[in-house]
Image 1 (tube, rainbow, N blue to C red):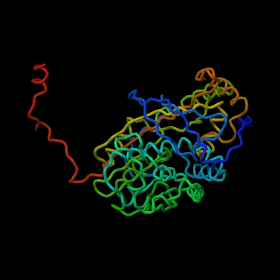
Image 2 (tube, rainbow, N blue to C red):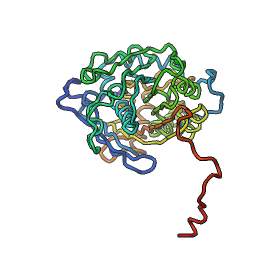
Image 3 (cartoon, helix red, strand yellow):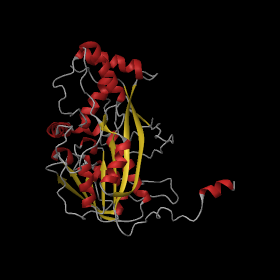
Image 4 (tube, rainbow, N blue to C red):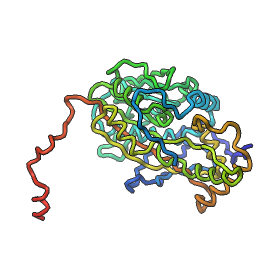
Length: 390
């Protein structure tokens, strides 16, 4: 049984004149505070208790051959059903899209550093077209010199949004945030995947592949990365972001302690995720060059654990691990978990934090025209001489 959700004030999702922008107070792994740009008005949560995004372990290890679909961690059918149910709740899904829209925006901002056009781009695991929404956002970098005011979609001729859930992919097909009238040369094409780990595209057919908040549900991550490398044209980038590492460690530890206390044992309620140390090796193994991998934490404050779990359900991000315990967790475990959550991780204002660790990755398909590192031993200066001269 779920506890009642906090009361939402009356406000239209389409009220674009009075947006709410979630404040960011997070840090990356390097300790640098990430810059926050304005989020899109129609996709931020319009509620009385505003989730506060800030910057601040189950782990998967990969030691198998890429291209093998025999290694399974997640139930693909269960994940597809979760997405379909989330898409059926249109308003709830839009209100819960604040995290996916925020990550998609940060992925697209990395295009500001790539000075080229991309005629055909693949958005793999498009969800509700969060990448397209971020690309169509006006004024992507108003603080730069000179300011970038044209939407990033002007860099792209066609965006192919590929997603396994038809309902989720087409949920916002008529929403103003996906209107292309201000970018007439941009075309959004939706493609429903029959299998989210098998890409039905020709080799060397895309000028860039983007992926945001979907690859953490992939069973055969090395195999999918190999296919991404295959569909890319030479010297073209893959830019992605997925959940990893200690994501939702507060929720996981609280439920484990509550179950241990009430039931005398624990069950997996938070899915295992890849570690940042694995991602760089996977990109290298699957043929990508000029790699960049970095991590940032986004922390969202919620009124209670039940609000967090309800939002995860509305996002389509529920547990889909094979062998998970079926049926409800149990009221006594949930109540104990909420109390433990507050005791171990609660904020002074009565809210609770939930940490989402985002692994960002960039890799380029190999090309003979790319810049190459010098051969080992070809250097003309001695580091020893430089240090002795100081």
